[in-house]
Image (cartoon, rainbow, N blue to C red):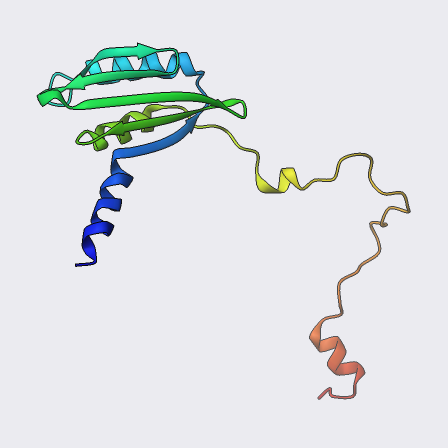
Length: 142
């Protein structure tokens, strides 16, 4: 019987989806209207209500698809909510350009000039001697 609540949570995960894109909010909403109205199938949905941060569309059988947008750290957070069109919302999200993030090592690079001190010479080696050289110096040679 424990599957009832877990089953509801799985449904909630598929009815509310979120992504982040490089597009500005108004372009995301225009793209959503184009994406959902261009389908000549049972998955088409047409704008019913809209505002500066959302578009609510109605599809086959009265199914509602809502796309909401909000600025987020120089990008746009996009939320999609629907009961039956979850696969189409995921496909729409896949058409949005990703936000480019810097590689992890770029963020850890120190700011400012390099530390003062002598630069390592190209002739000096800091590599440990080879295993054969260590064995010969310890008297373990053949």
